[in-house]
Length: 360
Image (cartoon, rainbow, N blue to C red):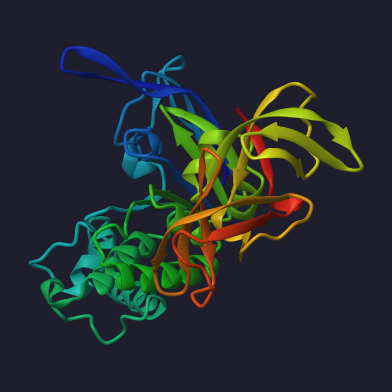
């Protein structure tokens, strides 16, 4: 089910001043895909989600779900939440502690007045799907955080919604359980012929779960793309920085030759992957720490810069090293057994294909 948002705006009044939560958002969410709204706190992603589901009233614009216009101020249309055919999983799960797993999942069907036999069959089917079969009579308070998340998912799915929406559903889980549940959720959603909209500020969740990501900032969509496209080919400095750790360096395009772009920056003259930036234009050089090829000592070569190791932090699968090159401090990720020492000289080779240029 495709969702189309056009010119959506929303203001709040806080401490006597108007805050623009959504600033003319235009967005098309394709059918049967996992689409993530990613951005920092206060960027408008949850407000946009709540407007789509009908829990917030926009100030202007239109919302269409599967071709049906569900909200338009200009046309005086406001379809109630319960008639939009949507399911939602909240950050807090909203599991009723006085109910069993069965009763929690059955609730949307019970309020519709469906026959008990039909409810039992549908609940059994969805509990098998989320791997909670046999827990029907268990009290909700006896479940782990991951199991509660699956109950919330089952309750959202049992009514067979056209679209399911997630508002940071994993944020209350510890790191290990969050990773396990994220993988389960991706598997569950991959088996469904359904549109999923997922809101998060966690870039790892967004990259691991999504078919497409919309990065938001200050009530606007900055950039949309597939996870690898957003990570490796971001067009904006904000997106390149937010989607992953990066060394961002102001630069100027010198020119283009031999299928590459040459720039000048604090590291010197650097050859980068081809770009559409005109000669003389200001750009930002984005260097991901994992692509900096660090060697101890002084090694000569094209696109090689020299510096000194300032710090090394062992974080398990990698070392995170800070290397000072002139006035720049570059973060690099190296193998945990790399022979580097604080205070020693180091050389960094910059592969042109991993020298990303984004708008300044």
